[in-house]
Length: 275
Image 1 (tube, helix red, strand yellow):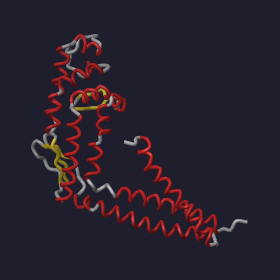
Image 2: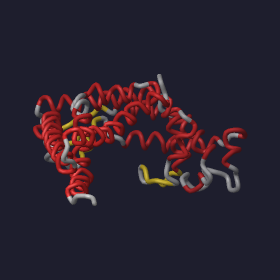
Image 3: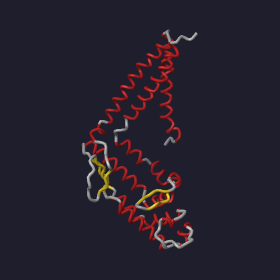
Image 4: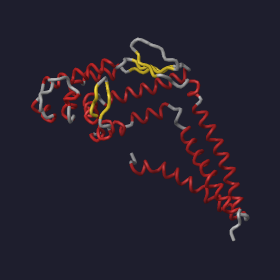
């Protein structure tokens, strides 16, 4: 006959100890990079990120359509146009500057974040013709976007880049340039939004003082979760078994499960892509 202590110890482990262990391990892992800008910059400067931005398959992840600058764009065609117009290096540099600006704001305690978008705007304007050609070639119905009579009736999109349609490409390129001009040179997110000429602001931003404590808060949370998990892990083993040898064996088995999960998650990316 199974003593009631055994299932009670198993239930304690399953519903309390295991979640606390997984939470502690996850929080500890997160605290090691969440408050470090180099961790985020490494992601966007990685060659694999550039490969994703340049991948022909990226357009398949786009929505069927979305609104931009007052126009309804076909998602896949817009992605192709962006890939043709904006160099990958410009995207990477813009994101890197944004990360630096975010953490500089945190370090200084400034209740706002300013991000320079001027190079991105200029790249979009310089690549307007390439964007127009790519969009018209890939769009299923570019007539919905272009002004009336800009695209001859019945013209197939696939013929535009071959036979050419100066009016259509010129109209589309002008739309791209106007969209670029409508973007701010400086994007500002602030805790207290105010109207600032030439700047676009987010409606709100988390106070930098609270973000600055993120790393410490995560480390402290990981410590307390780990301590609670360790205490209850021992308690669940002692509750399940009466002999010391069996208690130690139970403790070993119960730490092996969550440990294996995190080992597997850590090794998987290296096994899939060793580089």
